[in-house]
Image 1 (cartoon, rainbow over the protein chains, first blue to last red):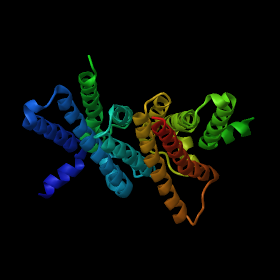
Image 2: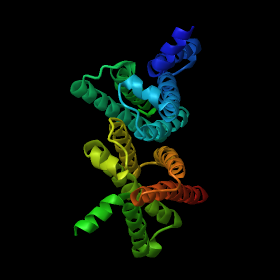
Image 3: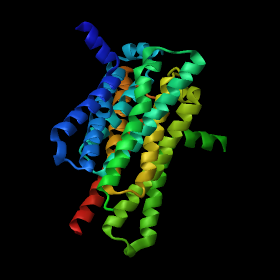
Image 4: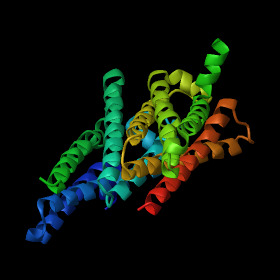
Length: 169
Length: 170
């Protein structure tokens, strides 16, 4: 049990990402024919905003803000007071994404643009650390890096599909 | 000249805030009676999004991302790779603020919520550090701290006033 909890907490973003996709798929399958295409894309988008961006953002806030040594070690970096600034950025984007789960298209677009730049910007930093310092620690080159790359791409696809399907022809 | 440039760069957020308020006031006064109350609030909101919002965030992106040593020494902290993550957040909020200039109310609301949570919790952390440091605060740190508190409050104020005038005119 301890191993599972440690795995989930160490790979929270990928767990939240997969959880969002599976949950959205189950909801779409259960509600079946009563849904339009737009509803289906909206459900995927909503769960992606909520779990891997919103709740994982709040988790990132707690981890960097209150357990800076633990989080720095997992990335292979030294603890730093700048982690508080990373923590509050996580909180800011996390709160926006939780609201965006139920927001209109303008609110969601803002959340999507912000999260995409933030996640992809972070990914560039992690790549730089891999190339310059050969840092392949799990927090730098593991699941957190891959979710930084993949989550915005999935969200952009679902947002575009959702907007196309709800826009009058 | 070097002293003026150093002073502006060290207190960039405060300079940007004052510039936004002065330019918005001039814009409102020049355009005078042709503006509704909603237009006036929106003018202030736009200048706040542009100068202390977008430009100050881009400044954070540049100084944290490309001059981490200078940024760290201004706070009396050691440089760290975490600065790149702060730089990315600065770039993200900067682009959100820039796009908010011409966006709908939902986009603007998302930007203000994110920006407010970011700046207020950031300054709260810095305030705790100052208290733990027997109230000793550097001049530059103090300026950023004040602006971090005031700017979101002004944005919220003008956003609510703008939305109210729009709602009441319907």
